[in-house]
Length: 96
Image (cartoon, rainbow, N blue to C red):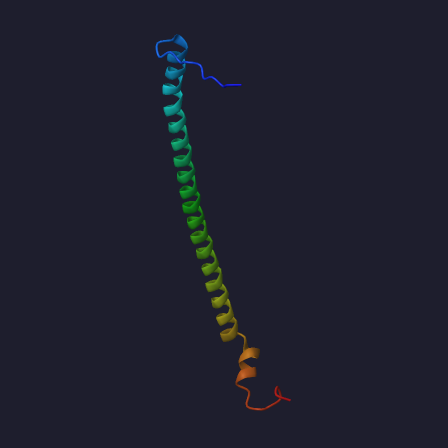
């Protein structure tokens, strides 16, 4: 049982249609793949930039809140007379 490969005629209409179809579709598929990988890279970069800006925003908000907390604690320490009397007490009634 011998396998024979049919002879392909270079001038047949079947060969010309298939060759023309391949010459059109192969570059289009290559362009589609390039476009997909490029768009994936652009979206990843935009997401990373967005996350970076969001982290900077949240970090600034946390810093502001910590500064407000620090100011509130300092004003509490300087204005609350009970706390000042505990630290500068001459008698030892708090240490017992």
